[in-house]
Structure formats: structure tokens, C-alpha cells
Image 1 (spheres, rainbow, N blue to C red):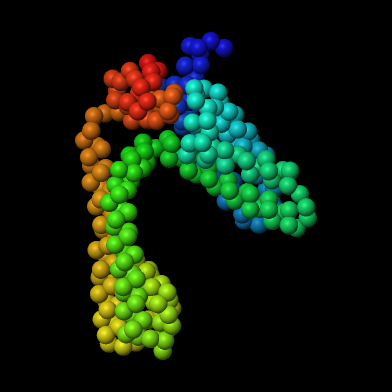
Image 2 (cartoon, one colour; image 1 turned 135 degrees about the vertical axis):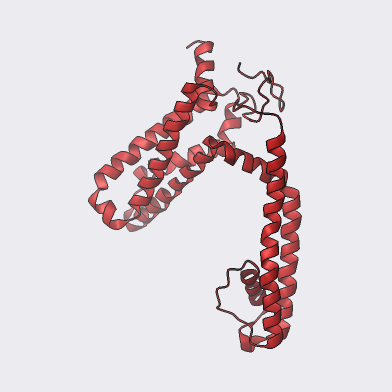
Length: 271
């Protein structure tokens, strides 16, 4: 098979700038969604017993499609290990392994439980959707760019819940269910995130006042990471237009539409 054909296949499989590449992505999108529906249907006992044969045939058909896609991607890239150990490479692998392992694993009831657990791992296929949605790529880049600020923010939140939990342990005590500082910290986390299970609640007036302050503080804290990520998304949108071209060397995206070489590793990008 000549290099030009391999380059054409690479453009179809890894990029979406051509009609063939868009069709390839749409077919995979539909296959991923169908695979997720099959996994969900198998978890419903009545449906699984009634349509066992159909679900098995569907599962093996989808698994074979994903297997062929996985090995095709390995064959097309220059650096095989870079793809195999990348995020999407591992997702592709984990999405097909459970079906094959489930076929070979036996051993009575314990073996059946292992097979059931392996089948649940097929929900990893849903992560493959993010590869074909451009907005998700922008969200991932925005989260990565703001990782340091979000990390500092979460460290600040941890300090708040530790302090609030300790204060509530002193104010309320064991008679109100705050039997220990870790238990009180659990209450602070539940209250600060506005979940509010209600399994532990303050009884004193001071405790209720502190709880109210924590609830109000929770709304403000939720807005902080949203604002951080939103600012990064806005900045990304203002940058120069990029294409869906994937570098065959480092497998990274985000290249300018007129780029001839990868800005990350310097490798030549397919024209």
C-alpha cells in the first residue's frame, strides 16, 4: 500500500476537514451511541433475557468495528506508542478489551460476576464521543489552561471545610450528630456544595446561623471555577482559527489553518 493512500486514510481517520473524514466521524459517533445503548439495555434483566441473542450480536459487531478502528489508528500513526498510551488510545483499548476477556473468563458464579464487571467497563466508549465534538476539545483545553488556578481554589475550599467542620464540632457536639471532626467535615462538604442530605443538622441557634452562612457561601464558591473556565474559553475563541489536523508525530491538535509544521514537535503536517 503506497504512502499516498496511507496519507489519505490518515486524513480520513484523524481529521475532519474533508467530506470523507466527516462521514467517518459521524459513523463512529452513531456506533458509540449505539454501543452505549446496548450496554444499558444489557443491564436491564427483562430486556437482556428477551433480546439476549440480538444484544450479543450487536455487541460483537460493535466490538469488531472498534477493534478494526483501533488497529487502523495504530498502523497509520508514525509513533505507535504515543497513540497506544495516549488518553484516547487507552480509551479505545478499554472499550474493546472487556468483550474479549468476558468471552474467555469462566469459573462458575465468581467467573460470571467478573464478566459482569468487565462488561460495565464498556461504558468507557462514551468518552470516545469527546474526540468528535469540537466544543469538548475547547472545554478540555480551557480546563487544562486553568488547572493551576482551579487547584489553588480547591485547596482553599478544603481549608474552609476543615475549619467549618471543626467549628461545628465545637458548637454542636455529639448530641446533634457531630460526633467527630471528620463527621463534621462531611457535614460541611455536604452543606457547602448545597447537596444537603439532612442526615446531620445543627440544633443550636449559633449552629443554624453558621449553617446558613455556609449555604450562602456555597453558591458563591460554585460560581468561581465556572468563571475561571469561562474566561479561558473566551480567550481560546478569540485566538486564530485552527483546524482538526492531527500531527502524525505527537498526535496533538490545535494547529493554525495555514500551518505546515507541528508547533509542538516540529513534524510535517499532512497537506
